[in-house]
Length: 403
View (cartoon, rainbow, N blue to C red):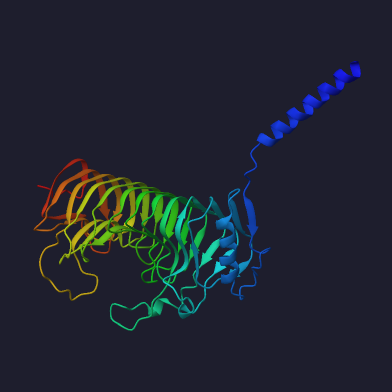
C-alpha cells in the first residue's frame, strides 16, 4: 500500500513539473547570425542578397520574435530594402561594420539601407554604418548642376512605427545619415553621427510627416543640419544632444512646396551647440507655395559655444542667391518660448528674429538669454527683430528688441 501511495505522489509531482514547464514562456527570439546564413565579412563581397534573404526569413517567422545579428567584421553591402509587414517583432543588432559602395552609382536606390512598413523594430549594437561618402561629396552640386547624380542617404525609415534605435554609429554618409518619413512613436538614443563640416547635405536626422519622436543622449557632427524637422512633423522631444559641427537643429525649410502641413509641439532641452553655423533655427521661404503654421515650440537650457547664429528665425530663406522674390512668407510662427539660452556667438547679432510682414510671429517669449559676442569684430552682442510680437523677462544679453 505504501508503495502505491509513493508512486501516486511521484506521478502527481511529475505531472505538476510538466504542467509548470509547459507554461513557461518559450518565445525566445530566433537568432539569425548573418555569417551562418551566408554573409561574408571580407569588406568586398556584396552581401545584399544574403541580408535580404535573412530579413525575409526573420520577418515571416510566426512562433516567436526574430533577432538578426551582425557580428564584428566588415560586411560590404549594396543597396538593400527591408520590407514588412512582419509577423513578429524584429531586433536588428549590428556589432560589425556595414560598408557602403564607395562609388555612389553602385547604389541603385535613394537610400542605401531602407526599412519600410515595419512595426516594432529595434536596431541596436556597437557597430558602424560606413557610408564612404568622400567620393560623393564633390558631386553634390545640384543647385548649379542639373545633371548631378542622385546620392543615397545612409538609412531610411518609411511607415515604421513603435520602433527605436540605440547605440550605433553612422559615419560619412553620401547624403543624409538617417531619414524618417511617416514614422510614429520612434525613440533614438545613444547614437553617434559623424561627417566632416565641409560635407554637403549630410543631415544627421531628418524628419517629415512624423510624430511622437524622442531623441536623447545623441552626438551629431556633420556638414548640414544636425536635426532637420520638415513638413507635417509633430510632438518631438529632443534632449541631451551634442551638435557640432553642423547647421544646428533646424525647422524647415518650409513653405516652398504645395500641400505642406503644420509643424507643432517641439521641445528641445539640455542641448549643446558647439561651433555650429546656427543653433536654434527656423527657416521659411520668402515666396511661399503653402500657408501653414509653426507653433508650440519650447527651447530651454541650451548652451551655445562659438555658434554663428545662436537664435535665428529667417523667413526670407534663400540658400543660393539670387532668389526670385514674389512676396512675404505665408508660414505663421507662433507660441515660441526660449528659456535659459546662454553661451557665445561668433556674430554680433546673436538673436535674429526676422519674421514675415504678412504673417508676423506671435507670442514669442524670451526668458533669461545670455549670449555674449565672441567674434573677430569688436563690440557687444545685439538682437534684431522684424515683424515679431512677444515679451521678455529675466536676464537679457543682448538687450532684447521685442515691442
